[in-house]
Image (cartoon, rainbow, N blue to C red; front, side, top):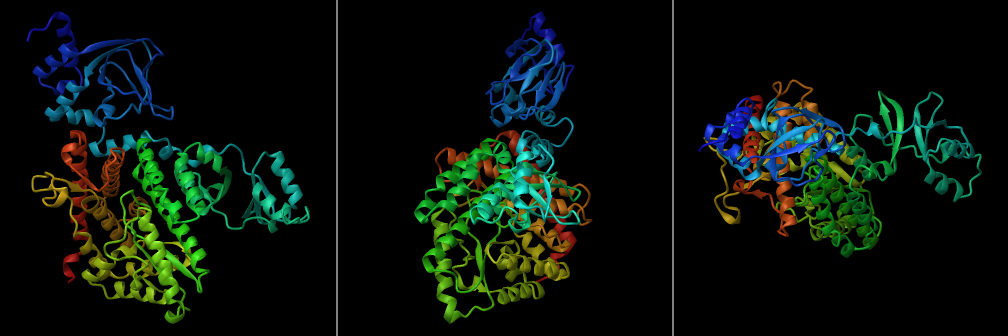
Amino acid sequence: MSLHAEQLEILAFLKEYSPYNQLPDSALEEAVQQLDVAYYKAGSQILSLSDRISDWYIIRSGSVEVYRRNGNLYNRLTSGGHFGEFSLLHNRPVRFPTVALEDTLVYLLPEALFNQFFDEYDAFSDRVEVEDATRLRNSVAQREDANELMTAPIESLISQAPLILTANTNCHQTAVEMTNANASAALIADDDGQIIGIVTDKDLRDRLITPALPYHTPVSEIMSPDIQQVDHQQFVFEAMLLMLRYNVHHLPVTKKEKTIGIVCLPDMIRHESQNSLFIVSSIFKANNLDELTALKPAVRACFVRMVQQDANSRMIGGAMALLGRSFKQRLLELAEQRLGPAPIKYCFLALGSMAREEQLIVTDQDNALVLSDEYNASQHGEYFAQLADFVCDGLDACGYVYCKGGIMASNSEWRQPLHVWKQYFSRWIDEPSPQSLLDASIFFDLEGVHGETQWARDLNRLIKYKAQNNPRFIACMARNALQRTPPLGFFKDFVMETDGRHTNSINMKSRGTAPLADLIRVHALATGIKARNSFERLNDIMETDVLPRGRGADLRDALELISMVRIRHQALEIESQNEPDNNIEPENLSDFERKNLRDAFQILSNAQKYLKFKYQPGRVN
């Protein structure tokens, strides 16, 4: 093909810069013939948040500034730079607004031709994907950078120093101090300056004025002594989940064990979708099972909205687990209203992904019941059987389907007194076998969600103490963690299902997130780590010497990417009014996503090989 003088000049320009110089001459000549030109004056907006674009932007002259969605500067580009590729590769609206810093001339490459080049020329696609980091880490980092909830520390919401009063301050003076400080809460300290409680506007109304106590009553008599606190470096979404979980509206913020401020619920609402807040409220206001089941569409809508707002997997898994826990708690309250108060104390357990705060929209129910050692089968058995059936049947009706393996409180084997549960765990750990642990491994992620939740903490302490000192148990758990392998063939091609309705697909749970959670759990048990969430476990694991340098960060990125592919697939199915599942078809992914997914599965494969080397699971039988 022949090019005129102006096109030849553009061709020479492109050959000077990466990634355009990774394309063959024939492709560059085709690009030059299809390029359009646009001019932007200094200070003008080139791309706005949520725009849909159909071109790739190449800067010929001038400079631009690229911003995160929260308004912080992300990058500055000059001649030869490019932008817009993230939106094109993911078919997503613009997440990085762009402004002309000075008078700027850009070339516009049509989307269809950009995608063609990306698919056909590996050298070009590799350079587009990464210039300073690996493909996988760059993809994960871009998601985190674009997410204000993920990157905003709770400290950023503090507007004033905390109001701190002594325990002997009377309630009238407390109200005066709160009014003068325009504060809705005050912290209460003892004579040594240690924070021992918190008092809020609501406490003054409910505990002083309503019962008509004297105004000179010491504030220590109406304060709340059990304080939930958040570290200044924790993220806004973590504080929001803590508020919802413990039903509190104020959180003291600490830095190096010193309280530096208090954040309240309205602060959270500015940073998080109100959907999850309203759903939790609606769950606890439901008067019967019909009202709970009517919330299923709202839960799905909340899930989709979080995906659309670029929440990461940690946030989505935590929010979905919180909703699931709330359904359980309300069902137990309704059960007690129907059956009468429980004759003895009990603790209802969440197991598996809910306990790890990694629950998604496609999930079954895994739960169990711990009963007081006062339990007498003839006196109490029928009550707790009915309570368990009510809750498990209700969860199924609310979208948390029955566990196929029968790991539910409705199964009498998993409805036992505390001393029996301690015997279960002691036997599993002291006398391990691969088969017994294969059946029981889900119990090693547990959390108390209702009742005597300290019993769940007792069981977790027992597990931590016994597991860390039993190499045979760790070896058995490692062997089971190797049962599910990533879907990679000899030449690193995807190996897909070959039968059933999911032929030519990959189950992202059983071949991705589940084996990752399994191997992370093994390292956590071996090192005595208390955290249950896989990301938190990895952070703690990386502070030990159990993993080679850099492997922990690789595993974290692989878990995030595989989880998000699974999450986005479920959200798209819901939006298409299909029933969501865990099976994705690689042919429906972009080349960019397939490459990243292949990298993530390879990291999982390498981690499993290291697990086999580290704990020698082949020695057990």
